[in-house]
Length: 263
Image 1 (cartoon, rainbow, N blue to C red):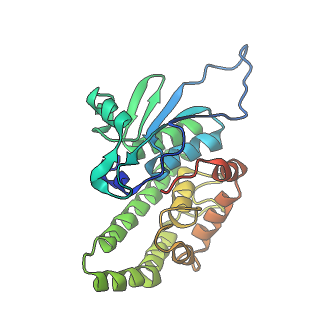
Image 2 (tube, rainbow, N blue to C red; image 1 turned 135 degrees about the horizontal axis):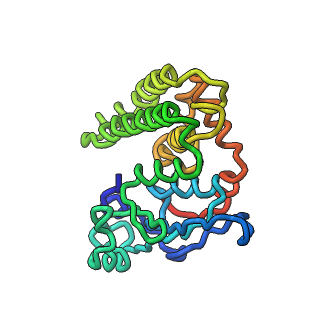
Image 3 (tube, helix red, strand yellow; image 1 turned 180 degrees about the vertical axis):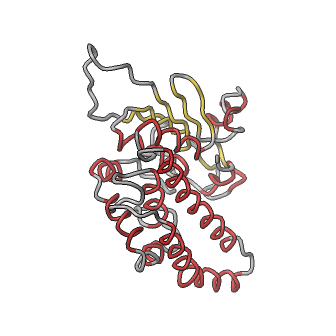
């Protein structure tokens, strides 16, 4: 779901414009094409919980407005000096009520959807990234939920207060726990032609696993990105999926051109 605003106190890059219109090649004939919905994604000027929705738009070649809410620090890195005037005014005006006073939220022809995972699943369904039928959709959902479980387990390790204990636990996580978890997930992947995890085409599950283990500046970017990639070494289905996602031209282009942010 939406992340607590306290997460964003760690960030200090505010050089990018607050609002960026993401353009694509899509140019339907106005005489024959149905009217496309208008999409506007509201999120901070970071990757975070807004990045998977952006990927889905890019892979689908669907235009959207990428509204990036700026922030700054009175004293760099000092959480007590965070300044988010646009976010604060949106919250005060009730614009964030749909998302419990947080971001992201998505507008579709002016109708609002909160919660990041709900946004991801909605866009994946709309754009054809939730499988060929309801069973495949549930299998895709299953593999995405598994990643959430693993992230929750990792956050418990990161939350250890004692420095010596935490260092040992982090070492164990990347050397033992994460590879064991990914091996369990590998066994849960349904039979299929590959390289994608469910069915014969890329799905939300492939994007979620790529983001988790292999994407540039992905989930483990600040801690041990190489350890995350190594956890797939004995998991051919998951590894093949992440390698296939990395070759998708629309995603490659976005990763090269997206705004540079610290998170």
